[in-house]
Image (cartoon, rainbow, N blue to C red; front, side, top):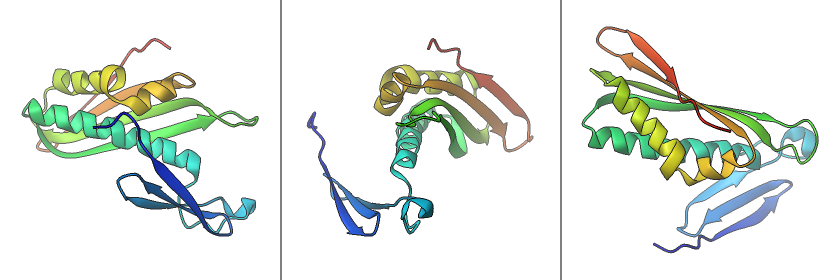
Length: 156
């Protein structure tokens, strides 16, 4: 695997761009209508949240599978707060991992979330340099409906 990634971003029309990754995958990005966009794709800043969710999600589900956890569904919910002044960077991001399954071990879920946040997710590591990330998890037992919640105590 190369240490260098490539991408191209081409103007299609108005404020709509087609972003193409070096691996050939494409996504449309657009500006908000009030900024001249047609609302046909996510905003570039939203792509950062999507990238964070995908990065940590892939880490966590991979680890939970290796730990032989019976996960029936998994969702990463993200909420980013932005500065009011330009360049309107994220100042705080909450990341909630919602894991549903049978007989899930809370320590395993916490460990997987912790490892993603502190070691494996490169997007998390980059965003953490400029924003406070609050990592939480919710475990739902699909048989009983019981829920457990937890939070990672992370240094800023």
